Image 1: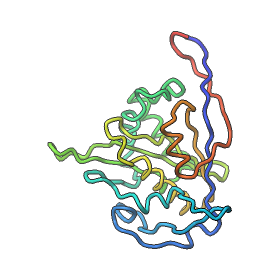
Image 2: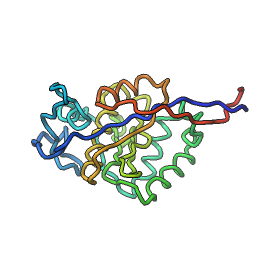
Image 3: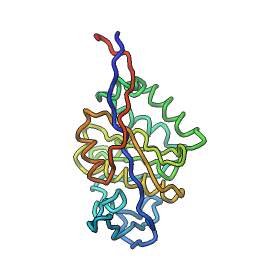
Image 4: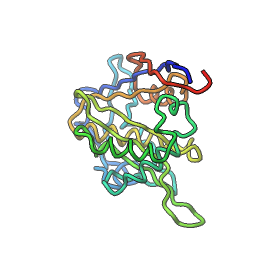
Length: 224
């Protein structure tokens, strides 16, 4: 074992002034189903006059793929969130930084801890399910959790099972979390991502997040 420092970006997003005041109704798949209000913001412009595609605006043009559903948080879903977390992160670099993500019991403990925190934002916590065609069973394949920390909405453990990536599910989960933060009265949110996770960084930047800070996480790694 040896101590290694993993470089991570803190990425931030600030909701534009008046965000949520200019909204229009869209179809069930894009926003209304499973407890969402069915309303998304429209027409937010940047200071330079160009259109800004923030997290919620992405959801306006992204329907939930067939066979999938987005489920708002309830206490009875903690185990499914933990399963989705494990399936999403067990083979990722994040396991070196947060070893609990590589264990089923560790993901369960982490999910319980997040859901019990004073700053837990239930409205920013969503589960993605997939209906398995052969069996009809509903499988947990994606998760995101939200916390309020020092006036910020803090995205926790946004992840999609490796077998279900490339379908826009992470974009939809992030948009649902953003909506939950906004409905909780928050005006800004942030997340952390390992700098080597270039696919995730591209997603966040495409949705309007900016790199705000470099942070280093120390971890004991075998073979170092």
